[in-house]
Amino acid sequence: MHPRFLSLKTRDALVKAEASGLVVPQGLIAHGRGEAFDYVIGERTIPAAYTATMAAAALLLRAERPVISVNGNAAALAGEDIVRLAFTVSASIEVNLFHRTIERERLIARHMKKLGAKEVLGVGSAASKTIGGISSPRAKVDPDGIGKADVVLIPLEDGDRAQALEDEGKKIISIDLNPLSRTSQVASVSIVDNVVRAVPALTEASRKMKELPQSQVEQYVSSFNNKTNLANAIGEIVQYLQGWMKN
Ligand code: PTJ
Image (cartoon, rainbow, N blue to C red; front, side):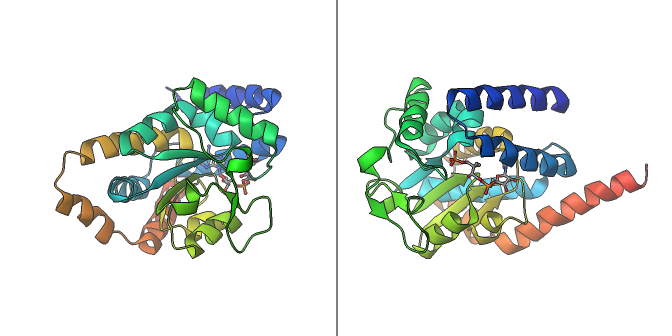
């Protein structure tokens, strides 16, 4: 699909999701920032994102309690893909909102269930645990989900929560088009890619990796350095922009 067409389709999906209450108006602004980064990335999956995806797949597969955190934008843009990924890596799905209301929690849980999710954690009183370092209600998590997770995938997360989850000793995998965001900077594995490309790629990588011996899966984790990989991502963006300077 041509990137311009995909971008228009994605915008339409978000506008509809905002009208239904799934996405907050701020989510449209966040998407605009994401699109700007996607443009300078070249609207493609860069090699550094591929490397991070392999490390992320390995982390998810060897995790004891992996959880995928879902907010309005993630549910609207990649809901079905997230359900598929959760099934592939045996992860739980938890609603976790920046702009938290019980109505949106229920709406997003219903949306995910309609797309095939068996269970959605973190709705209402289920989010009874508080993680340290951030102010309520963003600190709330489900004790049966993120509360006891060892690996958490956070598409489009805010920096404070990403930091707080890392501080709790969890391995955090972020999906964020901005390699400079605090979320990308503090995560254990930062996938600098659009969530609409990143989640299907992660599912595919996980599916293939399941066939590999454990030692090889382990290799993808032990050989990965997030600082180096983020620097590579920035380098790949610079290289892409330099290509434009020659035109
Ligand atoms: O549904 P809620 O209430 O949890 O709110 C969700 C938003 C996204 C509004 C909230 O989490 C928020 O304000 O996020 P931030 O702090 O604006 O961060 C969003 C990050 O996601 C930014 O760094 C964007 O560059 C990035 N981003 C935006 N669109 C995409 C993206 N990354 C990957 N794929 C995208 N499509």
